[in-house]
Length: 188
Image 1 (tube, rainbow, N blue to C red):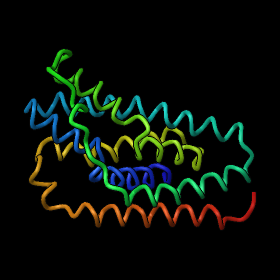
Image 2 (tube, rainbow, N blue to C red):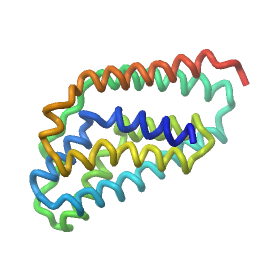
Image 3 (spheres, rainbow, N blue to C red):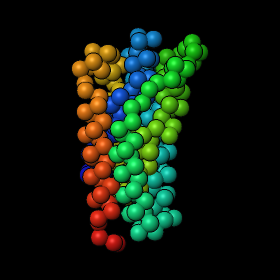
């Protein structure tokens, strides 16, 4: 259960102010149909994070424990630095007309926007860190939904009240702590 709770918390915090959260806001403002947008975000996140988690679980089978410990430690520290760099949404990320409907447009746009994103990289690292692949994917997916669904329903009322910079700093401290803990852990 630790893998689930840690994954949920890390991704929910990491997603605050992220480009996919901004994409959620753009999709909500553009289509004004929250349910298909939220379901599209859920399906895209589940698919994306299942793939990312599989990569993370696979890494543990090909890399020795000592290399994995150092790789994870340094990756978590790099993620801490990355958290301090604000995201912005490119204007073309939201796509054109809803050719595939609101759900399909959200699914495609969100899946593509999540590729190489902080939360996807975090999912790979968490799946490599914990042996509970399913719990990591469930946790990271829940974290994404906790950060994005309210944005779809409540829009800019939330984004104006949440101090995004403070959330990024807290996320960076958590990632830094995980990195240092991994590096200082006794050798397996």
